[in-house]
Length: 431
Ligand code: FES
Ligand code: FE
Image (cartoon, rainbow, N blue to C red):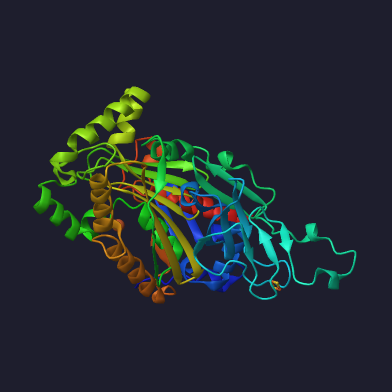
């Protein structure tokens, strides 16, 4: 007879150590499905994870001109990402100091200042309250300086990637990123200047945010789930992916993790395949030479040849594959997740290379591409399966766990990368 395990949440308060069953010596790593459906756990994640970790806001290149601004939402807070009139990148809490209305109510724009639509308090891009109607009505002790726009407690930028943190006691950004810096460098060094391509994709799914984080690092699902794409590649280009060859998975510490693959597709920087067009071959090969002049051969090879899916804990994923996708995975409830993604590219690449890069990105990772809908469907299917969480309470994430004892290198179809995420999740949730 099948043994029914108790629902661990029925036995008392949230205990992250009971929810993540981590016993490498027994070959066991499993996660209780309550972590993926329980609204109380989601509320605790807001406090223990999203209010303590550094979170991605945007890329500096998204604000090319002084005065450019973008409305963003991070950790449930509305933000204004704004390049002020002095050229400094600013991150403000998007709430009027008067009575709270959203100051910025459009997705993007350019302005030296913004005026609140409610009572017309007006703020400069440098944050000061610059004007308000009938100031005299507040009396002579009114001090505009007390009403400047406020910022998240910490703001930082690494190689153009701007983050903020709502914990004033958090470590600085480079310390937080730790070993992940090396992988961000591999992305940022692909061209003298990187830029976010104009426009973005936004979509959502009826599944827990952590399922999509797991999926983003999951080399095991590639061939079974994305069969259509690999069949298409084979047919269109005669290339195929051998997941057993030249793949790696790494726990980078701090919940960050990466998988690297040497895929069969073109990398605009700087691995040419026929999909990039014969006419672009010389330019792509020249980029490779430039990398080899600038970096040592191994580093140039890593930049040019290896595809990587990088997780910056908790919710930033950079898929540096046939194009570079910068993706944030934002929960709105335990069972609902919003995804935003941007394409990053080398500034000044020829128009035809840019067009092929974007075509390749959209074909695989666009919201209507040959991969992303598969991934959404898989995550939503898991969430539907969790309706039996009482009877089937555990998800297995033990693949490759024996290597934790033997020290053998992990491959992308192992699950050390997901265990790295969940171990850090457990540690933060236990604090
Ligand atoms: Fe903004 Fe009153 S709420 S001016
Ligand atoms: Fe996938």
